[in-house]
Image (tube, rainbow, N blue to C red):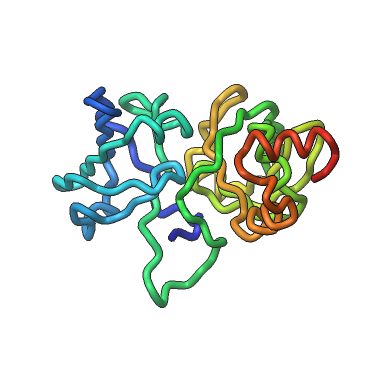
Length: 213
């Protein structure tokens, strides 16, 4: 379990094909200091298990299913990734409950900048739209954010300068893929309302197309 408050932006220093997936190595800086093999670390919002820790470098074995459902398979050496250690009992919850289980990906479609904020519009996979509501929480690449608006199959978030400075969203551009995790409470409500019909994402998409969600 995580909060969506990014601790540090790490840098990919290895991404190699292995049997059944990829071996990902990240320079996690000071975040690696108290990590041990077996510990959880959210990388761009994806809960991964550290398999090897050497100084500041942390290795992960990423399976094919995770690569298919997230943007981790697109990572190359030098890319920046958002990192957050798992929530400890008694920690302050400053963001929202983030499980580290990615629902799907989205694509950045628009980005506007002003002196006070940056507004980013993301087009998610269509099956995620029932779980995205104005003022609801959403995690983008592991960052806890609030949905500002919905429009034409897209949603927007407003980013303050601190978020741009402390996460990799400052470097994201139009066309980039991002990992999305919808709010677990909204997701549970949608599945409850859909009842036994909510078996998978394709079913939810069909219900949305028919106006039943």
